[in-house]
Image (cartoon, rainbow, N blue to C red):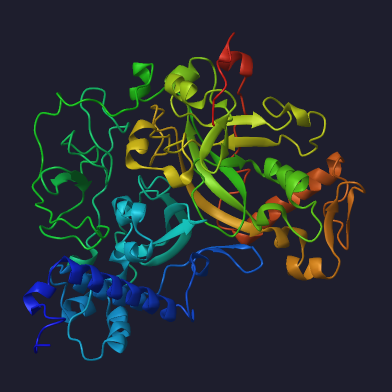
Length: 560
């Protein structure tokens, strides 16, 4: 065999497709191994190593792979794909010195580094919806939020800081960033400001009160704008990528964007698209009333909603919510009555400060709230046809008193005073979380927004307002230890617990009122500087089936 050849094939020939495929396979395998080793796995690491379940089946909140593993894997992928040269070590160290040091330990003889780990989540399966950092339009810095995923299905942003300072966590939709509440930059920072190039504050979004104007079509934050050539948010521009696709962004630099998913890194031209947009069609959602494009005359309500939750974190959109009495009834009736376990692995009661405003068609019926639709894994399951009512009344906030329709089976059995369940419609209400897409988000935009106006797509806002654990509520240190020692929170047959009396007397008004008062006091003790329920009185759930549906309920929703 000749020198410089492989089985008689020249070096030049080995650069063909066969070598490229083989090299990509070898390097991809090496990247996976490096990821596994960096995360403490020896051998093959399944998906459950970073998200999903513990060995005993308990769901855990996933955590992204370490930055060193991501950066190392990115290096291998870049070398296989022949991508453009990434930033220099000096530039990377200036942006993220701690990560640069971490990577130097992996590549001590290398003088170049890959982009910041926050840009390369897609390599380890953390890309997808999280490739668009729409939260930066809501007044967050790039490093304030983290991409996490619920049950390997629902990607979203978890924002625990604002301008680098700790704050109550907000959970934001990965496509629209619904749930991220805008806040202007602090006038006088309490710590030295970062360099302008790395930390320039985001301009305030200027909304017209509705996501889609009644005369001109426009595209929402971070969505494709190739057809509208216009962004609803005046702080953004419509930047072209390759003459085919375009995106509403805060800024754009020509060339490859490292946050784009692998296989989709065609260079951006960053040409700004503009022009007369009146000829472009409106986005897909078509309400039945033009009044849903405008603000309403309804009163704005600000109050607390609650959610009984496991250890996973995700926004309350497309979720079953409650007031505190409704949350306690749900806990008592469905969660704590299993010996040795809590159903659905629930661990806590989350609280959200919510603002709501009814749409004009709904308030003209004399209603602030519509029917409380149920959601299963992010998809609306009724009663009846969910979308037909949203097309008629906009994406309203729904409610029902727990022992009234559509859950009248509990009539006479609920002794928690004024127990109410709520629903907050988000994007893609017809799809499970793992089927949410940008197209779906345009067709079904939901009602979440920065400040509710009562338009059809701006009926509520929310922000995290603390939580208490079920252990705190019951006064125990550890449910696992309690259960191991023979404890049973509540037995439906005996109407009492074993080694616990907290849930005794489920059908006693005084006992239920005491539990409700106890939970309220726990929230106040834990968050003394926050408004109490007395400060933010809950509006009456005024939904009426007869008023809302009239003489016809309509066809049932087919969810097969």
